[in-house]
Amino acid sequence: MKMKWLIVALLIMGIILIGIYVNNQDASVETPIVLEKETDDIQKNALPIPELLVDSNPDEQIAEYYINAQYGTSNFIEGKQTATLGYNGDYLGPVIKVSRGEAVRMHVKNDLDETTSVHWHGLVVPGTADGGPHQVIPSKATWEPSFTINQPAATLWFHPHVIGTTAIQVYNGLAGMIIVEDENSKALNLPDDYGINDIPLIIQDRSFNREGAFVYRDNMMDGAVGDQVLVNGAITPNLVVQKVKMRFRVLNGANASNFTLRLENDHAFHQIASDGGLLESPLLTEELFITPGERAEIIIDFSIYDTGDVIKLLNENERVMTFIVGEDADDLTEIPERLAMIEKMDENLASSTKTITLDGMGHMVTLNGSAFDMNRIDDDVALGTMEVWEITTRASMMMRSPGHPFHIHGTQFQVLSRDGNPPYLNEQGWKDTVYVYSNETVKIIVKFEYEGLFMYHCHILEHEEAGMMGQLEVK
Ligand code: C2O
Ligand code: CU
Ligand code: CU
Image 1: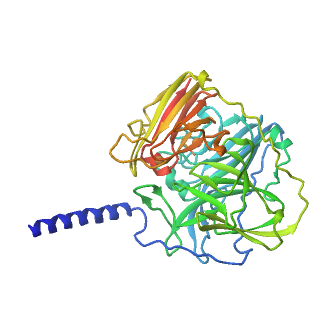
Image 2 (image 1 turned 180 degrees about the vertical axis):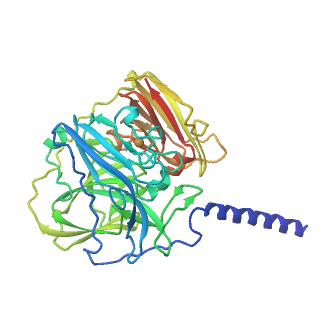
């Protein structure tokens, strides 16, 4: 009798060990190290500010940009080299600034030895210019989409979107930011001096081994999570800020982790924009919850501090970065009470209501009961019609589904309700990614203004890759 249980126990242990082994196969078997980088050397660990990409076309109405996906070497940890990927550089990419109405031509070169694609996350463009899995760029090839910017001022981003390697390419460094401006945003007196009082904060998490190499641990439950938070590719960097209102364009560029950002002193700041643009009015808050793929623009007023004050930005209780208050400066910017006009889309005018069920966890995930198939179009949408989508994580499987950041390509939508309750105050503007909590139903209203094939999926990149994605055709 005892013998039987011993055998059963040994079998279970064996299965668990095999599971752990298989799970760590493509990563490193070594335990990753957690870094405590408490350097006070501000210069040495200054926040990297991505370069603004130069428009190579002198014509005012046309912008032309060159982007190269390439191999790089980065130095995240003192004395250690990390093999990385980047656009036009070693890690991450430049910031592309465009204006509404501008015609844009992109030249995207793939200098990698594998295929990639570049998807403009949040950009409202025709399917053929979207950069999703249908616009694969073979190694050494160049992809040259053209489109016209036709949406409000916003913070968007770009990243690979190829079947099977999206998650690892993003993890290794392929991501960049897009800033869209419009007449309204230019007329407002918001901080918009790039690199001075308008700063991108691309927040990600990564794990390293003792040699300094990235460790990609595709956790069975939640996708690849890291031990260390990075901002613009630096571990707990410092930024010297002027004693003025500073605007930060926060992008959650993590593969799978949610971040809850706050200042260590718990002072409030203003959120002025969500994924697709400015909110109607600024929102005073002490905390920003941001999930993979989402963006938020916030303004922190440093004029209330003294020169030399040190203010930490935290994720939960862990340091993300440090602001060091610098010299007095004239601040001509303001946070107006009215930021933008957002016309509410009327639910009564929607032509149909659809349900999107996100189910499962780890690698066993589905969307509406099946895993993504490149050769199957899951849905047809009539051009220009409004639809209500009910995105639910109420599991039909045995397992209870975790929360999922749900994203749709080629559009900006509005959140109507969460389990029948009004959406959060910071999601009452334009969104392209919305977090659906475990056992929740989020109702959104969406409209597609361009024809083509578009993806919709969970933005936990490992869930997306495991099949929590569908595609629709707008025609
Ligand atoms: Cu951020 Cu389908 O992408
Ligand atoms: Cu997208
Ligand atoms: Cu998910």
